Figure 1: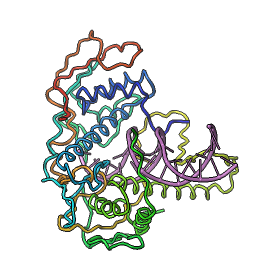
Figure 2: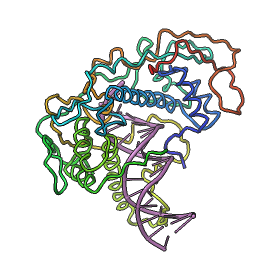
Figure 3: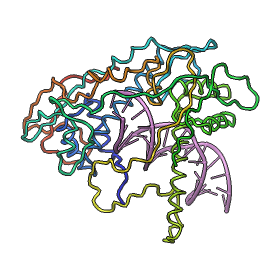
Figure 4: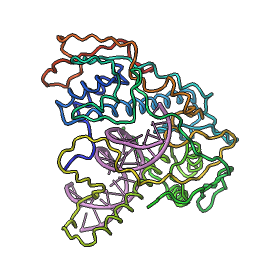
Length: 197
Length: 197
DNA sequence: GGACTATGAATGAAGG
DNA sequence: CCTTCATTCATAGTCC
């Protein structure tokens, strides 16, 4: 029974956290490999696990920081939006209350360049760089594909995310039996369900 | 110490279900925000609660359908699988043996695009997109998706890294309590953290 | 009280 | 990097 997904053992987690704490954010391919090799002493693991771990950890860490930062800026308004998993709060401009929004652009300056840590590579010159590649040419470790190495830099193949969000219409949030209708909420089912079945 | 977890009041639940029934699946940041604000009329609630609610509800809804479907396919097979203690086995990938690593990318065709509903945003355009992001940058600042790619991307290959590879140093990959020292790992934090803190 | 269920919360894994 | 999906963990509520 193959464990569907990897789950770090306490030791592995500890090591990963420590590396992260020390500043590692975007491990290069060789770093990932080495880390993986090391962690495999404590349990089954693949390069991609390490790769994804850092990616997710960094993202979620940052989101947490943003939240805290926001918290400070919003020292008063309670209104319940304190802790949000990922997402953000857009400008909510209701005349009624809360207005904890920031001048945008405060948060994109957070992450520093990734710091560094080096895991020495046996012999090959590691100019290759990041993770992506490593995923490919690893013997028994696979990497997520979808990244391309370019000039030593790892680029994700994506360029241009499309956002399809037609923003129109007021939405109606269903209200429970008796309650004042919400001012500007409207619901716009644009496309039926979504449960393709 | 543990903050009890949120539990929807009957009214809140009713509203959420209604929205879901109407097709909402992946509410955008502003939608979550508005919904949360509205629901807070009926009890304490945070954005993340709303966010998670939709995530979970959708996932479990889908999982239920999947299971039923599977049931049909297996109408004949008795296999005595009747006694499934807890949950169920959803995707039981009987890959059996080698749980090697294959670049995934095989089983993707299932999910449709999320439907849509719109919570009209007072004025700001909510180009922001959905869930995740929304919680983060409350400033309604959504990244100009494409722009950031330039320097915000995964540059794994930081130019400041020094490769110091001495075969001798015992590595400083944090090890857990008792374990055999790893052979050649080295850790070289060149620049402090990165966590702006 | 332990087994089980429903479900909030967290996070690994992918895709774009 | 951002978004979404699938799993899994954790626990309140329930039944016996």
